[in-house]
Length: 516
Ligand code: XMP
Image 1 (tube, rainbow, N blue to C red):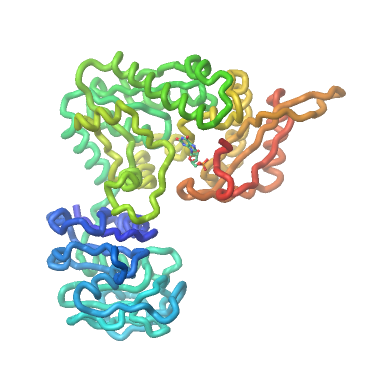
Image 2: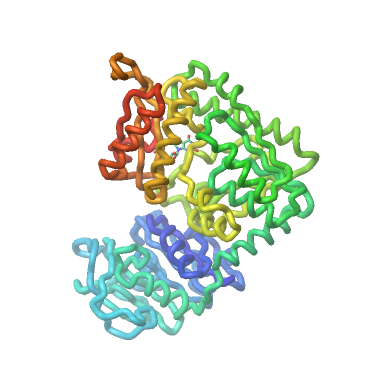
């Protein structure tokens, strides 16, 4: 499959470059900027991109590509630092620009170049740089300048090398996608082979060749990733070989366990264990108020229960399947050189079971090349219902981090009831899919209210709804006032223990999405 390799020097937008190229239908993979050229080479490789970077080429510790990368008989596109790096490494001159160039700048061409096919003079490019090219290396010429005179594109057309001082991957860059298209198709000659059908086939092939006839175990949470892995396993292997284990912690949302079971049975799951460990979790959590202590109790118990279930249900040697995504691989250091701001997710807990299976080489991770949106497409292609694919994220510790303070069975029931009404209303109003994550939180206080003629103390429920891309930052969803008022009224009318509903209007930062 035609591939574009992206050498990462720590730019915040490296991931974006990779995604944009995949959206064009061409497989792209991110490598540490210093990867050896020999590791990149494959018969599928069609071109190389050198990313931007917080470094200057003059910094002592600035990362540089293996010199052999420049010897490859392949097109190379340098973006920002990538351009400066090539210039510096190949004998040109890069220096600090007088004044930095940030934001919009119009492009003015000196020459025709295939990178700018179908891009009009004066198109707005997005610049962000402190250094710029003073003198291109031998054999290179300036193809375009910014309206302020900075070289915006230089090229060595004979060797199919090109560098740009702007960022085509960001959405403000006019014709940015066209620039990438021109590079990937026009200059590299790649073809559109990265399709949902292709990665479905690739996933099936990979699973079959990895596991052979051994059993495969998958621990499912009901979220999108593990559901897609389950569906893939069931497509790739005889159902007899696939063991699915779901642990009900008692901290799930209303009807969640039943829905997961129903969906997996509909997919032909044969060995499906729905383990009810709710009492064990509630007992372990009794009286515990500290959120981090709750998280660690749940995490530890989860591992103990999983291990016990796997050992008691699966005979002999087996593989463990995991829903690890491409972003998780990169965050764990398999991709980039670690200079980009590394974002840790809460749920990549390394359990002893996973560690052991990894050291035995008995792990299958069929989503490891995919971004989340690609996982959703794959799930759709596999026939998973839209309700599974479009599910809002749900934290591993479940309702325990949405019941502030000590958790009890009674509080779980109250929160489940309020949360179910909230989500049901969002769906009925066509809002669920417009919101990234929405949920109810049970506060550890009671407030006075009136019911009929009597004063009553009821629980306070907070509603949360946010927009986000990746959960790292979030904006509050701006409900129309009638929606939030009607939803609140339904909750207080139908859940007698709740006397008051409030809406959380805090963004992240400074707040977090969850309350604990
Ligand atoms: P915060 O509250 O940190 O949440 O802004 C960001 C995203 O992460 C989810 N989250 C968790 N997921 N285990 C998880 O698996 C956890 O302990 C946990 N805490 C938060 C949260 O739901 C949101 O999507």
